[in-house]
Length: 55
Image (cartoon, rainbow, N blue to C red):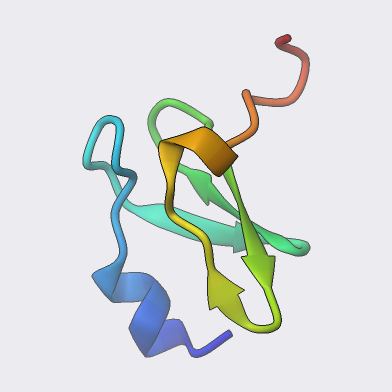
């Protein structure tokens, strides 16, 4: 994923920056994980996964 694009994105829940981790974008503050499908980040709360270790 283009690093310049990632810099423009923010978590829709808490507005903190996100960072790429594997095939996901992870919020640096709340830990929500957003999928990246076909190179396109899906920044919808309905598609977000809870932080690792939480259910």
